Image 1 (tube, rainbow, N blue to C red):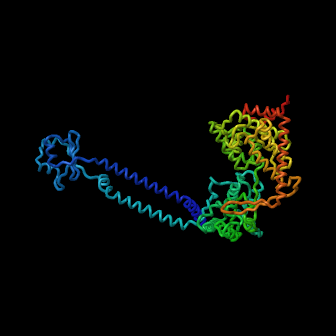
Image 2: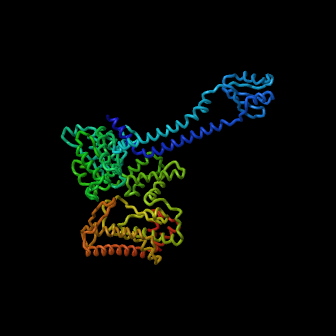
Image 3: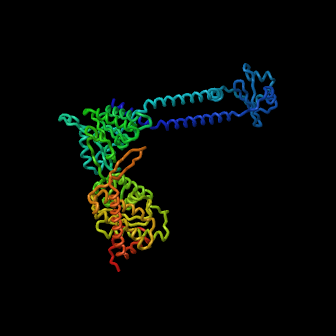
Length: 627
């Protein structure tokens, strides 16, 4: 029963996904077969060249005249080959033999001896292509078209019957290719500890049932994109040796009413037959949003699907040995009914990896790639704070692509370092060539960022400055924290705002003119200042208050948010405080650039000449004693 359920589920998922493509593919195949048959028939018909028809008396006259070299006899057909190379066709009586026919026409026996006579019989191929194919060919083609159309009609009716079946992909525990365990997932130590109980329950349920304990029916994996929620769910199935039913939440919803709920019922039915098993629903927020927020009374397809999931989870018994895992990066929008005890009553939070976890993740993704002996993964981990597991996997892959592009057999440290910037900012735009004046402005702009950042205590250290275009940026200043940070101070925000406005201040001081270059810097500084005032309580005038309450409403698939729960007087005070913070940050940046103008010129000149300055050279340049 278990094997039948798994095979049925796998076949249904694949067939339903490819039926539209199969129809066009088979139609193309049929068309190609017809064209091939037509070409074959035309070739055969062309090979049967038309021969000149003459009478039997003319044949005898030509024999007597000594003009015939060979005669082939096939039933009543005579093929006469002349000495001049011409081929003629004649007919004789059916009942009379060839020799007797010639005697009746008084052929000269002496001349007949010089003629080569061949008596042939009609073989199978001659019968096939000469008689059967011309007659049966059109009949076979018409029959093929009738069979093909009937088959498509039958398939369409079967598709209608199976439309409500689950499309979940099944990963068998014996499948070595997709087999994932906890050792393949680096970091997330606390999450793995939480999920070990789920693995233990699937392996040894009696230990829990004897003491009266109930394992959670649902486990919700929460975290930002790319931290490994799906990979961790697969690892649970791999550790437990249980079938893994994977389905995205968006795959439940279709145009037709009731399909989502039907697929939910079918998915849980298949999982119960294959128990112990794991059901994994990715991006749960696609169907698990708060009910009643839609237009039209809330009776839409998404809410019906959600209701069916709630009913199925309530109907699961302890001895069913089915665990429902789900992943989302928007737990704040989920319906409270999903999160109550008895459904998704255990929540596992996955954070971005710290430096030790990043080293372990890099080691896993470098496992199947040849790397140089001098590669230091910890240096790469230090330069990638805030990277998720998916970002690190992409980084290693980009490094391998870079090495292969240069026909090298191993990945080097330089490949990995260059891939960091490629993942963060995009590839180098070598075709984006700046004019000498634009290059000078970009150099002073980035020098302003770097100089202000290195002059302030609480700003992040500068690792690299470049005026080579990457992605949408004409240049960039790469600042990375020296250690993983989970809390930020007011001083850090103030220094980061000042360093963000360093490019703006440098352009205004050096050139007396502003460009569109600092537009992104101004947006970032304004966003930090507004968050300090409205979210973090870091304003002296407003004090410890959180202003702006988010309200969400789903309207035609779009989110409309409202963040206004304060008076006009408070709004004016917020604007004043934001402006005060930005003005203060600009004043600090201008003060640094004015007092260290010679350092600014030195950094800008180096960038104009070399286009890029690394951390060691930058620190040496900044620490040199001014003349």
